[in-house]
Structure formats: C-alpha cells, structure tokens
Length: 316
Image 1 (cartoon, rainbow, N blue to C red):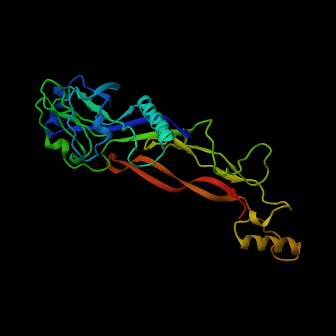
Image 2: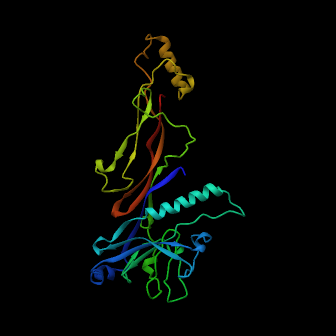
Image 3: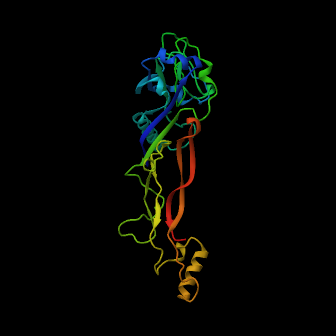
C-alpha cells in the first residue's frame, strides 16, 4: 500500500424538521439528543446495488458495530465533526489488499470491492430534529417487520425512520449540495512504499544546487483556522539554490531559449549587456490542493485550488 489513512472525520449537519421544532425543541430535549454512528456489516446487498436503488433491510440482514457516539445540545446544532478513523482505516486497508490481489479488471470473475456503509441514528430526536442526508433518490427504506429497526441505507450515510414508519417531507426536501454529509481524509505515504516516478531534488545540508525546500504553512499561525476546516496546513514548499556551474548539459534547460541565452552570456564573457543576467532557481512543476472552508451563511465549500504546491524546481 502506497498510501495510508491517518485520520477520517465525518461531517453531518443536524437541523430542525420544522419551525415548530425550532421554537419548542429546547422544551422537548432539555438534555440534548444522543448521536450514534454505526458501521453496517454483513449486508450482501450493498455490494451489488447501485446508489440510486432502494434496498430493503431487516435486522436479520445486517450486523451493526458502534463507531462513535456523542450528546448534542440544542444550542450546538448544525455541523457535527465525528472521528471515524478506525473504521475507515480498516475499510481502506481491506480494499487495498483486494486491489493488490485482484487488480482493477472488470469481468465475469470480478470480485466487487466492499462499500463503506454507515448508519446515523439520533436517539431522542423524535420528530423535531434530524440529520441532513442525501436526496431522496439516494436513500433507501425499510423493512416489513415492526419489531425490527427501520433503516435508511445509503452507501455513505444512513438515517432511521421515526417510530411511525413515516418519512417527513422536510427531511427529504432537496438540499443544497453544501449541506450534504461529507468525509474528510488525511492521508500519508507509507514508509515502505516504492515510488516509481522520478523524485525532485530536495534541499539538504550539503545541497547547494537548485532544489526544493520543504516548507509547511500552518493556517492556525496565519489566523485562518476559524474559517478553514481542512487541511490544518500544507507543505507549500519553495525553491532555493544556485544555477551556475560549468558542467550543465543542454538537457537540463527547460527551453532552447534559456540554453542559447546562457551560452551566449558565457561565450561573450562580459562583452555584452547580458553580463548581470544569470539563471535563477524557480518552480517548474506545481500541484493543486483541495480546501474545505466555511463560506457565506456558514455553508461549507470544497474547492480545488491550482498551483498551490511546489513539486519540482529547476533553472529555466
């Protein structure tokens, strides 16, 4: 495995079902409500059912393992950050081994990868509070027996029905995409991972030539951690070092123009107006970075920002 999961946080937004619940919720739930996240295991239907199809689940079909629980007071409703690292690590590692064993081939003997299926249960929410889930076309419903729990199944998120077995329309109203649950993963490269791609020259105590200097930017130190959710910071990196030396070969230049100008400067040996011009160490390859942050009206926005990370340096 080249990459491993370091941390996994599930973000789920809780809200009132109606205006009445908003006005009288504190009377119905003076001690708050209890939130539970379960991992659904042993459900063979999840491996062969598309996301937009309905699945009927009963207590005989599934086995549930508690992942995390929390008490939420009504004055702190809204986005809830839940650490589900252990279950995501176990799921990811299992699928990584599956990928190594079976590869990415699709066919008759293709073995489907296991999907991560979670159940979000709100004990004490009654009909006034609910977690905001995906649209109704992606959620699924129920079982036939009244003595077994009613489950709503999605391959990323689950929500239970109320005790009457009826679904309130407010809970399934079309939601803005900024309100649906999402998972934030923090990954790192495994120490024993073999990298086939060419590595950029990184700076060190004895490196004087143009190189990439690793540099970590902390959003906390910038004072931006009050609106940036993830990541907490990132390696922006920068370039340093000199580009001189008599042994530079033509293939090390990034353009014919740079090669010709440098050769002309050397050949004239101070007899031209290029005497003070020398190549400088600069970024030659960038990488994008994903940023998750609070936008207007406390909406959560995910955006991919280009050219945020210096990956390679050179002497153009």
